[in-house]
Image (cartoon, rainbow over all chains, first blue to last red; front, side):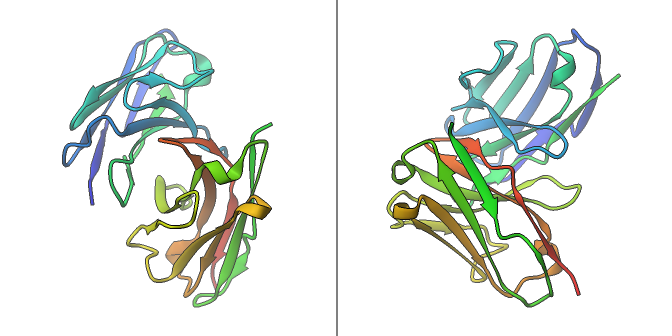
Length: 107
Length: 116
């Protein structure tokens, strides 16, 4: 199975900060990667698909990049509603695998 | 409104069985593959199963392979997950999600607790 190594596992930031989360795949996965946001007690929400495409309705402060094995999610100006946990997911081959998650906390 | 609603979660004893359901509405269910994803208490997300739009292809995580069976009824706009030989480590919130190159619509989840 492809392993997705996500880092950091947590970070502290302030409103207005720029935040970057990375995911590294144990083998090349083209751009078959999505980023999801999850708030406590809620279902995950798709932010970015195919590594760099913004899902409809998602604010433009979210962006994704990467291809092959290395991917990043950037939040350009953190807003109060962005404090959540973020996951990457590879759907290049089965079994699909999530990263371990990155919890973005208020500094 | 595009919606997925899971049901069937319960408290079950180790070794028991459970069938989860996911009711879809607001979109043409038969056009989409579907997945199940779970989340153990305080843990991350774990993908566990996928079924394509015609039920021709089904895939499972190793953690549930041989114990779980995914199915769907396109006439009833419903997805199912039959879970057998349940273990304590199957305790989780189970989400169904719609797939069209990515998991774009998720239900709110149903809780399965495996305990004696």
